Image (cartoon, one colour):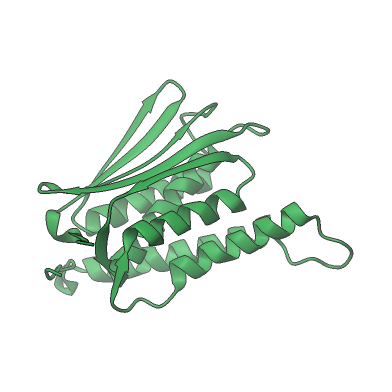
Length: 205
C-alpha cells in the first residue's frame, strides 16, 4: 500500500488526534454501561442480552489489534451490523462498501468517526420511532468517499452529548486530511466524508 503520512507531532496534531480517539473510547464505554448495565440478578430478556452482546462487539471491533491492513468491506460491514443489533431505533441497516484495503490504525480511526456519527443519528430519532440507516464507502481516482446517513422521522438537531460526538468526528476527519459535510433534506440526515486517494487502495480479487 502507498504510505500515508499522518499529521506531524510538531504541530501538535498527532497528539490531538490521539486525545480525541481516547475521548471517544471513554464516552463509548460510559454509554455502554448506561445503556447495557450488568444484570444484578433475575432473568434478562433475550433482546436485551443480544443488544448488550452486540454493543460489546462494537467496542471489540473499534478497540482491537491495529496491525497490518484491513479489508474495509468486511470490517465496516461487520461494524454496521453490530451497531444495528445493539440499537433500539435502527430497523434497517444498509451497507455498500467497496473492496478497499486500509492500514489498520487508519481504519480504526475512521471507524471511530463512523461510530460517533451513528450515535449522533440514533440520538436524533424520536422515542418509539424506527429508522433506516446506511453506510457507504467508495474509492475513485479523486479519493475515498464515506457516507453515513439516516432516513425516517429524525430531528435535525441531536442532544448535547451526541453533538459533542459529531464535532469530535469532524475534528478527527480534518486531522486525517479529510473533508466533512453534513446535509439535511426532509427526513434524511447525511454525513459525507472525503479523503485523499492514498487513504485506501482497491483490493484486486
